[in-house]
Length: 509
Ligand SMILES: [Zn+2]
Image (cartoon, rainbow, N blue to C red):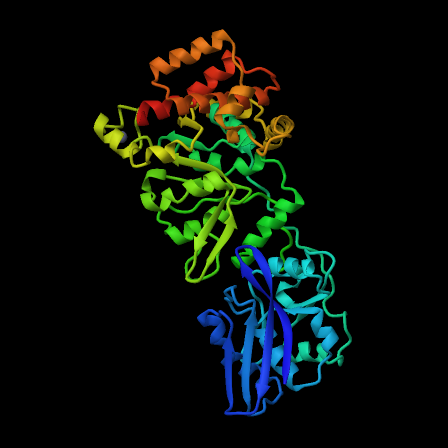
C-alpha cells in the first residue's frame, strides 16, 4: 500500500514542496526513512510511530518505508513529523485522497500525538500557495503567522487525532480557529527627539541613511554612540509589504517570531556583542538559523567596539556588503540568505578610550595607531562616513529645556525625500542608492565645477586622499546635496564629505 502527502522543506528563506511517500508491505516489521534527510529527520521515525500509537491508531506489523523527495534538497528540522504520520496512516486507512492531494502538512509531533509549533511556517505557506495547494494544516501556535499569506486556507491543529478526523471527513472542515486580531506589535522605536545636543552626529546619520552609506562613529567611552545608533531605524522609510514579508520569513525560520505575532513592520536593529562567533554572525551551523547579518536585513547592523570583534569573524562582512546576501555552506549543500543592511559601527579612539583628551589619555601615538589598525584597511574602506562623536557639552545639557529638538519623524521626511530623488536618478540603472554608484556613474551624476575641483585637489595633498577615497567623497557629497534638494554638487557638500573622510586617511592612510 502506498500513499503520498505534501510538506515543505526549507532552503535559505525559500520553501520547497516535498512529497512524503509511505510504502507499507509484508516483511519483517520495520520503520525506515530515506531521501536526503538530516539525522534529526531520520530519527523522527520512532517519535512518529509513538505518536500514531498513542493517538489510538494501530500499525500493522509490516515493513514501513518513508521516502521524501526531491532527493537533492536536504530535509532538516522536526516539521515533517505530521506529514510522515499522515502519510503512513493514509497508506493503511481509507483517507480522502483528493483532499490530501491539495493539502500541505507541517508540525512536530510529541510522543502523545500533540502537534507542536515549528519554525519557518511563513516561507512554507508562501511556497504551498505558489504551488497551487488549497490548504495548509499546521500547529495551532503557528496559525497567525501562516495567516499572513492570503489565498490559501490555513487550518490550525492541536493533535494528530484532530488532523486525522479532518482528513477522514469526520470533523467539520474549515471551521477551526477564529481569525484573531493580530497583536499590535510595533513597539515604539527610540526617537532622536530624546537625544539632546549631538547635532553633528545626527546629521551624519541622516546622510548615512539617506544614501545607504555605512557609518563608523569614533568617540570616547560614554559619548552615546550606542544610544545614537539605536535610533537609526526610526529615521528609515517604512518597510514595504514585500520587505516586511521578507524580514518576517527570516525571523520565522530562525524561530524568533513571537507566538501570535503578525508581520514585522519595524526595521530590524541588531547589535551583536563583540564575542559573537562566525556562524552566529553569518548564519549556518548545525541548526537552520539566519545569522545576525540576515536578521538585520532591511534594517541596521550595529557593531559596537569594532576593534574588539574577532578579525576573521568580521571579515565575513565583506561579501554581504557587496552582494547583499550570504551563501553558507552546510554539511550537505548550501543555503542563501538575504543580508541587505546598513552597517553602523562604533569604536573608541584608543585602548583607554579618551583620545584626543590628553588630560585623560596617556596612550602614545604608536599605541593609538595599533589600536585603530585592529580594524583592517579593507573593512574600514566599506565605511563611507567616519565621524567623531564628542561627549555632549555642558551647554547642551543646560539648554535642554529651551531648544526644540527635532524628532525622528522630521528627519525621516528629509530621508524619504532624498530617497525619492535617488529613485528618480537611478530609474534606468540597477541600483537604488548613491552609495552603490560605480566610478562611471559617480563621474556622471556628481559633476563638479573648477572651484570644487581645487578643493578636492587640496584634500588630495593635505589628507592624502586616495583614489577610492576621492570617489567615496563624491558619492557622499551627492547624498548631502540630495538631502538639501540641490541639483548640483557644490564646494559646500564636497567640503562636508571630505570632513567625513578625514579620519580614515589620517589614521588608516
Ligand atoms: Zn588613550
